[in-house]
Amino acid sequence: MAGNSLRVLVVDDELLIRWSLSEGLTASGHSVLQAETALEALGLIENSRDPVDAVVLDYHLPDSYELQLFSSIRERLPRAAIVIMTGFIGANAKAEALARGAYAVVIKPFNVIALERLLLRAVAAQAEHPTHTRDAR
Image 1: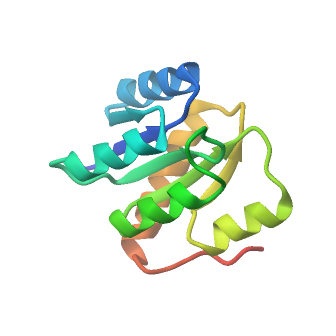
Image 2: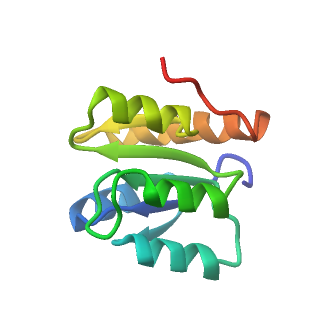
């Protein structure tokens, strides 16, 4: 991460969500990779020459059930901050995501500027405590 510029992977099957996050984050000086599916996201991670600082991951994808993709991303990108986004998530699933190391779970729709601030905090916290997992409070 150079200065406050992040390299962010946005994974969502909704084109409008990917586009709006990409536009907002890019306008703020960040680099954004976009994936529509779990398979595409893993391919981008495997073939990326530069490290990914943060991942914004949709909880519900057509080719990934619940936290399967989260676990795969965490294995491949242990230093990246991961924020889960979803239209709905139960309390138990949210608690599990946080216990497994998600920095936060945000509910759609959300403000892109607020999400950018959250990503900056998440990356700073991950850099400070790379093996830290948040407890599910």
